[in-house]
Amino acid sequence: MSVPLGAYEGIVGSAVLRQLRQLGEKLAGIRVVHVNSTREGGGVAEILEWMTPIMRELGLDASWEVIEGNPRFFEITKAIHNGLQGANVAISGKGWKTYEDVNARNFKRLRPILEEADIVFIHDPQPAHLLRLCTRRKGKWIWRAHIDISRPFRPVWKVLRSMVEPFDASVFSMAQFAQPLPHPQFLVPPGIDPLSEKNRDLSPAEIDAVRSEYGLDPSRPLLVQISRFDRFKDPVGVIAAYRMVRKVAPVQLVLAGGGATDDPEGKAVLKDVMEAAGNDPDIHVLLLPPDSHKTVNALQRLATIVLQKSIREGFGLTVTEGMWKKKPVIGGDVGGIRLQVVDYHTGFLVNTPEGAAHRIRYLLHDQDGIDRMGATAREFVRENFLLTRHIREYLMMMLVTLHSNQGNFVEV
Amino acid sequence: MTLFEVKDCALLSRMSGLPPAFNLRELRDRIAVCGENVLFHHFCETTLRGTFDNPDYRNDFAVWSKLNFGDRVLAERLGILDPYAFPSLRELRAATLEVIDERLGESTMIPWARPGDELFLMEATTVMFDTGIRISHPRELAASIGAMTGGSVYFHFLEARRRPPFGKDDFTAWLLENDAGEKNRPYVEALAHIDFYFHTLPLLRKELMKVLSDLEDTK
Image 1 (tube, rainbow over the protein chains, first blue to last red):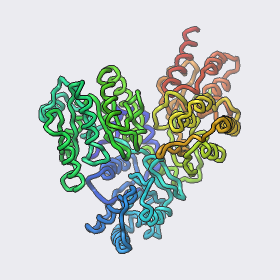
Image 2 (cartoon, helix red, strand yellow):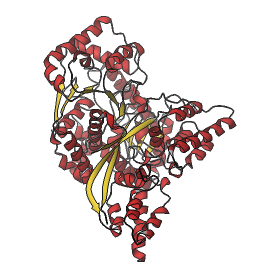
Image 3 (cartoon, one colour):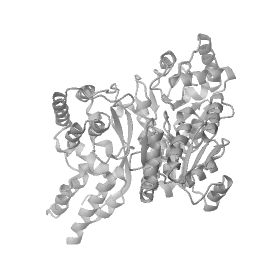
Image 4 (cartoon, rainbow over the protein chains, first blue to last red):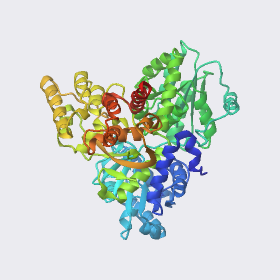
């Protein structure tokens, strides 16, 4: 689904759209190709789904190509993905050969468009080998790493680094996720779409419907954590914090997420969570289908406080989503949560279940503080973490990369 | 009177290429060799960057000293450095190094950041836009500034001091350029009295509007 750019004016203001249109005029007609490995599912596909049409609306000749592979290829790229995030994985020489062969097959199909493109964005490691194959490229190639590769498993990074070093530039979500590379490394945090089903305004009736569906009591405070059932999100720690608070305040807890059914690790975590929840009727563990965007939206709006007590995190867009809904967030002191949650201003950073319980109790005594932090959080997201800022930085990056002799100042 | 052309700007951040600093001595070494654009980014571009405006200090070195090294003494000494009070970034760099050297001399242990809290030096490209908006008379300034984006306020009042005429904001430069009979002197003086470095951009915009509106009210 594509929303016209003008629809965002009421949210971000006319000056922001004017910047985008001016950048679009400067880049009009250039051929931009995004390449990733999946058309649907996952954050990268979600970004490209809105970014490609908006680039077209701004006058760029933008397209989105998806590489095709067999199950073996995706097993290998999953291992590469995990290895880049620090997991000790073994990828044999045969495995890397399969990776390169699948890239080569895709290159045959994509060759004309890649050779002619003015800018090619390669998203994540799966299609990274295409650059080596495209010896007659005329444009600039940019590698977009959506994951944290700051502490990779060295044997995996050693091979991949040789593939990404020849790119003209790379992009990371934050400085802490990057690796030294011999070309410009831009820093572009992701953003959320305020008009998507997950973030758009909901009517009171839509919110009430979700409240009723899950039997939530409107008269008592509600704590909500939305995330996959993953140990890094520490759902059991959230239950421990809830229990400490429950002794003194009549709170309810929702732990909602998806993705456990086809993931053995997820199933085990879900089992642990169910055991930790026991028979407590005020703990609602919800295993949601992947398209439950409206339910997630309503749960975040129903929350008194949003939790994201991760012990390891990427950028943490669920934090951004909660903040956009005017909620203070109590989040783990890790990854991108640190960029978003500022103590006493947009929520609190915590390191333990005890810390989370302390901050929950602190906030439950201070409704004015909840309202003030929620309002600050919303404005902070409006200024910095919406898709309009995200696409502006992509456009600026293209401009700077195409005119790399212009130094540190570019006039549009 | 020439027209004042209202510009807007945005930053595109990138890594400086320097290795991260894990302790105060490494930070000192990075500051000693980094490009002036890096220094400017961590002292001056913090207001426009997509990070939360730190309520304590305007420059990253002071914030890092407090949060990452746990050294409040150093944070206070670095936090009071006003980059716009120095004639050039060279002098600002020398003053920053002097503060850090003094602290290193006082310390029995070099402060370290815990793993994951290392300090990354960055820089940015400024992309400037012409808004198409023009101001024709000083009395329009207050209202025009009230309608400006943070990027415009930053560009004309802060970033301008880096461009010729060095050390002057664009409003002042425009007022002086069009001031045959010294009629604009009250505006120039009002702008000169703003202690701007310690403001966030929304606060700075408010302050600019206030001093200019007060001036109109007293006429």
